[in-house]
Amino acid sequence: MHTAMEATFVSVVGARPNFMKLAPVARALAARSRTRHIVVHTGQHSDPSMSAVFFKDLGLAPPHHSLDVGSGSHAQQTATVMYRLEPLLQAIRPAWALVYGDVNSTVAASLTAVKLGIRVAHVEAGLRSRDRSMPEEINRIITDHTADLLLAPSSDAVENLKAEGAPDSRIRLVGNVMIDSLRDALPKALATETPRAFGLKNGNYAVVTLHRPSNVDDPARLQSLMAALGDVSRSLPTVFPVHPRTRAHLRRNTPSTAQSLRLIEPLGYQRMLSLIANARVVITDSGGVQEETSYLGVPCLTVRESTERPITCTLGTNILAPDPAVLAARVNECLATPRRPPPTIPLWDGHAGDRIVDALMSATSSRGPI
Ligand code: UD1
Image (cartoon, rainbow, N blue to C red; front, side):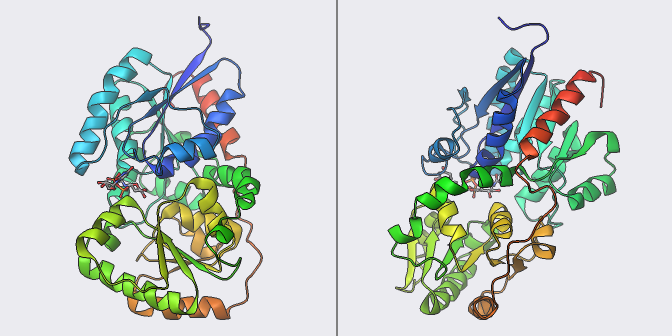
């Protein structure tokens, strides 16, 4: 039996970068009385190495519901989440639907909930790359324009929301929830000694992650990136946990790969964190990795023209490096630059999950429209 005062929250997650944002919110909600939290996994990512290992590493209970949508075109994936989520939300009728980040599951869940009259809170609202060719940018814009509560990680995100006309009453600056997970997991992550397991010396190797369609879907682009990584690996041992999307394109196009470049399976949260924390330099096109390296003070080269996380360039360690032809030279510049202590970034303090739940509780008790 649930008391009349109990508030039900449904979190909808589906893809790898959602899980580290869910964990701190789940923990903060569990610590409050008169709350019920139901987790729905859309199944956008289903490989154990992309999903189950993250639930385990983050101490998350298995999801209450799985929609098993799997892969597909953007329209298929988004529509299937909506179609399967609608009856579930109708049955649960939560006070809030919580959506995370910028993946297809995020936009699908927010559209479904808002049209059922269920209030939507967007965790990581307001990020903008201003690159509309990125599917994530479209997902961010639509999610922010449908959500009732916009939980922003940084002041630039707040400014973006205001510039698009979001009323102040909907916006809360809560900080970076992914850093909550990082701080929590770091001791366990370091204890895995993952670099040693791969024969790498702390502070003397590069880690690579690449999975954006703009980098891996075009065979010529992927070929030139693999050649650049081959060059990097000749001066610095280089390890590359390969995302399934990238793996599929590598199989299809079989670009030549330098012997010294080590391609490995995707890693779980703790082992990946261990690898990143001890790296000399990280080369990535991931959003989350730009933040993790900035927090840890590890130099990061982002293989993209733009970033939706500009604070990682202004205050953090991130440098945009979209051109494969000069990637190895950029790595050498990093090697020649003495490491600086990790920066302090406002509200990257491990308490974003609590601030998110505070914002939700006060918006819930206010009842009417925000
Ligand atoms: C999605 C997100 C992206 C995020 C990334 C993190 C969107 C639009 N994109 O991209 O923002 O950075 O997740 O990983 O939502 N695959 C598997 N098993 C899995 C997952 C994926 O085999 O568990 C393969 C499938 O072939 C699939 C492809 O990877 O077609 C792409 O997966 P998808 O979820 O469509 O997009 P991502 O590239 O993972």
